[in-house]
Image 1 (cartoon, chains in turn brown, yellow):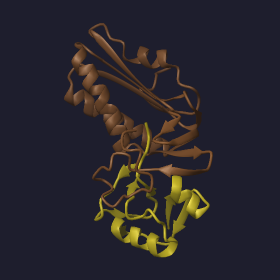
Image 2: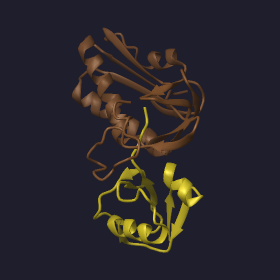
Image 3: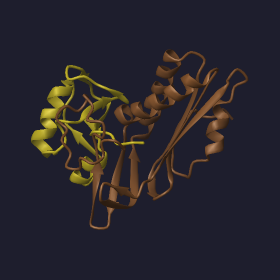
Length: 158
Length: 77
């Protein structure tokens, strides 16, 4: 069965399997980014997060990010899996693996991937606090949403 | 008829994950105005519209049968 390089899943992510997808005999480096659920953001204590995705489009946009990376950094291989549903503190929400012949490209491309995810991939998270809940948006204050002024401003470096 | 998918805050506001509007051959801009007038979504101005799973521009035309989604500011990762 052909494996999917860009995937939205509802089950816990097997990190090792994502890394396997980018292994290459010509690679000298693999970088892995693991995005986890954090308890404290500013003074707010998160109980758990709920992620939702527009799944077919989200997988398409993840694949688009992969194409962008291959254009920018020659010889790289990319795999990204994002989990949706309810996630507890410490759980893994996203894994990005990039392999490349030399390490610098793998580091740079990996950071590029997470930044682009926060710009163009239709995934949303809802914070559950002990005293309320809210869907979080516009973490990067990016130009796509020039009028976005969410109430929660402590998410800009999430 | 155009079916419109809703997510996150918009889905909660509407109490459903999809709505249909009796429109065809309208621009994205016009659709957003209609949505604002009919449903009064708080986030419509800062949202993008996706047509057939790609981001659309204000002047793009939406035809009957297209899959339309309102994409409020995303927060993945």
